[in-house]
Amino acid sequence: MFEIKKICCIGAGYVGGPTCSVIAHMCPKIKVTVVDVNEARINAWNSDTLPIYEPGLKEVVESCRGKNLFFSTSIDDAIREADLVFISVLSNPEFLAEGTAIKDLKNPDRVLIGGDETPEGQKAVRALCAVYEHWVPKEKILTTNTWSSELSKLAANAFLAQRISSINSISALCEATGADVEEVARAIGMDQRIGNKFLKASVGFGGSCFQKDVLNLVYLCEALNLPEVARYWQQVIDMNDYQRRRFASRIIDSLFNTVTDKKIAILGFAFKKDTGDTRESSSIYISKYLMDEGAKLHIYDPKVPREQIILDLSHPGVSEDDQVSRLVTISKDPYEACDGAHALVICTEWDMFKELDYERIHKKMLKPAFIFDGRRVLDDLHNELQVIGFQIETIGKKVSAKRIPFAPSCEIPKFSLQDPPVKKPRV
Image 1 (spheres, rainbow, N blue to C red):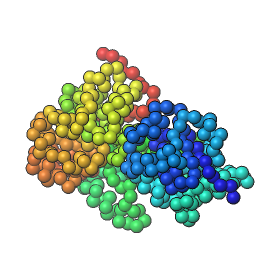
Image 2: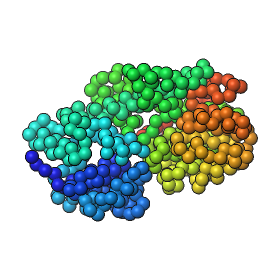
Image 3: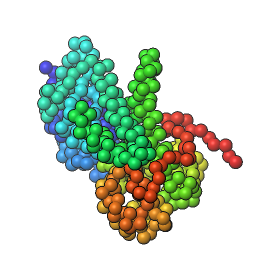
Image 4: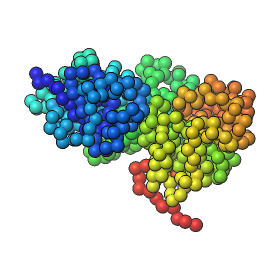
């Protein structure tokens, strides 16, 4: 059988970099070269400060970089030398979760490899299987035709996104009835037919994959004249948009129906904890809705650089003209962000937000001081926070007995980062 000794991966981003770093780490006899046209990104991969944050990634890269792992902008040379080129030869979809990508790569649930049903295609499939067999048990390596492989990737992310939108829809019902969505999720999750994964209600899912893959599925269904199927999956995206708008409406309504010129601390900008990735982050959407109402945002995230936050909020579909420079401040720590704020809004479930000195924060905030917990990270602290003096609003639960069930009174329009910006008429 043909043996792969040199691999080229085109693209040094969130997938290519970690994936090929782990391949090099687990296969020391294979030379792995990751190439990209972005010279700054390649320079970062070759430095002590990697371009992305992922737990365990730095250690993996440093263990084999310069030995059998290389990062380069010499794309043509790497392709010519390679026995296998990722993205060009086979369908090998990734099923990584950011924040646990290294663990997922080292101990995958499965590896899926799709190829053409031709002698050449099957030869390539067998060769790539041999690479993964260095550390993945054979029974976990699945081989399919190309269509099955690609559709499996779309369907997997669509099913996960569907579960999040499903529990988020129930969270709205819980707030209206007095139920607790965490208790409901625990009860239904104990049913072995359902399971307890991806039943965490929140301000909405983000990241590069879920929305993109669901929309790809919608497009595919429309193109193949399956409109009912397309509408079914589109509703997963619509519910996610609704949850974000509902949460922003709740902030505005709770702050006496206006946030104009009010300081609001946004804690967390990455789309989930343990990553610096902000793509399709709910924080972008929440920030946009609040900026449109004139709120002054002070944003803190432990892993997202200031430049990335400003870039995301300066997207033409998010803000206009000088909105960001007038309304957005990037804070160096959560205490600075909350100093003098009317409210703090938790948009990312960083563990550090559970350990903050909330008594210190409350003393520096304007009163009444509000906490809007979009990730349910403070559930165990509700009694303590109320004693301190906070008014707490969270997803899928009434925290205060005095609080009436929430029904939004302000209508926030939909928007998508994929849509062209709509210019507002000037008054």
